[in-house]
Image (tube, one colour):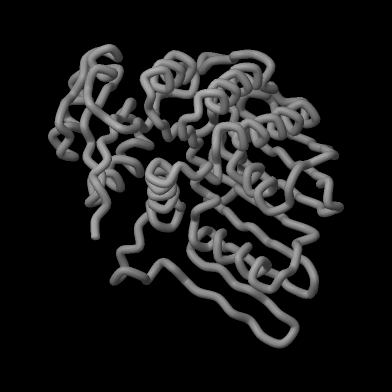
Length: 324
């Protein structure tokens, strides 16, 4: 039985919208895209036609006057504060892309606003929902065991603006999700230009005594994403989100995801976007607190700020914008 259809508005039509969000939203039978707003109206109009939305909007006021139950916020992170408060004020639940904002103070403001509103506000840390990552940590939970060390590597073959903040934040969020809250941070970075770092590594100590190691090279041969979880005579490895393996003293178990769906296991499946978006709508319907609520996401941003400071990289105390 299909649930009552939810109407969702989407703000933003950029790369992440086209790669991940629109394809998932358009395919969900119990969701209808009611309105799309973009910085350029012609982009909203094209997305409307491509994904079967009811309306393309020219202004935020027009968007907010449209009937909808919730919204997906995919704007550049530098302008989230201009959009999230009006959405919440209009009684909408919101799924917001990561990072929540560009400064820690603004992240805290938005998280506090979300908590006080009583609305569902979720930040799309999709790596928590990636099947390989989820299966890896579930092996520990099913066995009743606790990890005591996690090594999280997310390396790329090119430099990008504030790469650790923009890209490695997924691994920082996973380390928190797997190990709890952090009480010790030691980090190093290599760079000529601190806004385009070559490398960032961190040694993290957690309140439960566990250790987390973060690695993020910007000079790798190719994209490499691996999470290794150790503890109580078990090892679980998520490898490039294509597969996972659980290693016991007497056997190994695992699965490769790429060949699934007749060879069409897509990026939205493997990287966790589909299950992340579905989780948001589940929470909208049930009023459960999202796994990656704005309040929880703030803790990831706070830990990232500590890592950046320890590594000598631009932290989250200033709004550096995109032009540095």
